[in-house]
Image (cartoon, rainbow, N blue to C red; front, side, top):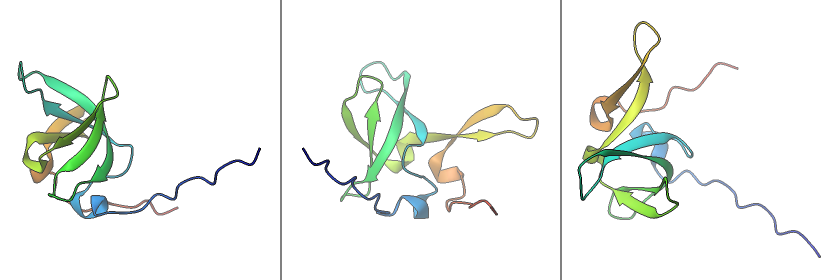
Length: 94
């Protein structure tokens, strides 16, 4: 039986927002407003970000309701809103 070819990863505007496929983000839950983590999958048609939560459910979260993890000045992880992250993805040199 022949294997199916892998789906190519298509850049659908995530890099312009400062996100990349597979990046972990967090968002406030709808029922209890606790922060939940999710994995970025795609950019939705309405401008929101499509992600998978910890239970494997698909979510579409607005950009202003998400936070991304960055390293602070002393190396500790901090969560800042995506709108304050500056946008744009810094690529490595090598």
